[in-house]
Length: 257
Image 1 (tube, rainbow, N blue to C red):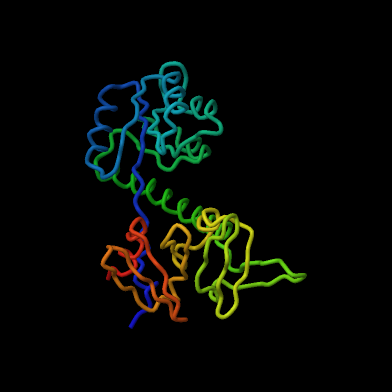
Image 2: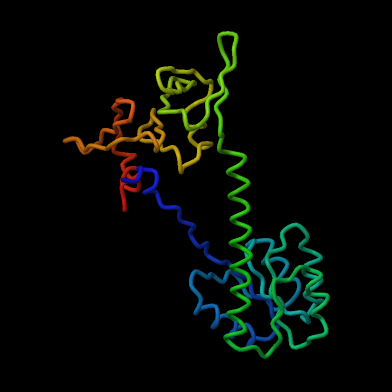
């Protein structure tokens, strides 16, 4: 029988792709909108016809993706990127001229669509963008995990420092501005509100089942419903803990197969 934590599915939700279109030709803008309408989870935030409009639209909307023509009234697509500096989104250049390709990739363009392009070539470019976003999101999540999720709890008190691995912890209980960490027969007091600690813990290992209780998912033996609509979480050590109604979704996810 698999442990309860193995039932928790790790899902990476696809982020909606927010887009600004910058092209002085109306036909080109309409073509891009039509192709984007066939893509899932895409939202066009603005259409722009010149350099000034494009800079303003990107600074205001902060899109994830910019379709950028190179030759536009008021300057070039490269002028747009030079002005944006710190808020440059992913860029797909769209142009009828192939001589700008080298310079485009110096600006770290994701792709370079040479007009006229077909739907298949467009989909390839969108695929490149989604792939880059997924890699960036994965790297960000890994960095957040290393920064936020403690592998050890460091508890100071009574003239000593105790190091507890996350695997040793059975459950955690709120105590005003402290938390009481229960690990086997011993309990340790840590000065940190439970709301702060909950945000730092690995959700694959720990779950908050009550406003004052966090449990180690690997330590759960069984979950029993109560007549009141709440649940009782029974740990391997024999401890019984309440799961309040507002946290039932955690257990529903936990027990889902």
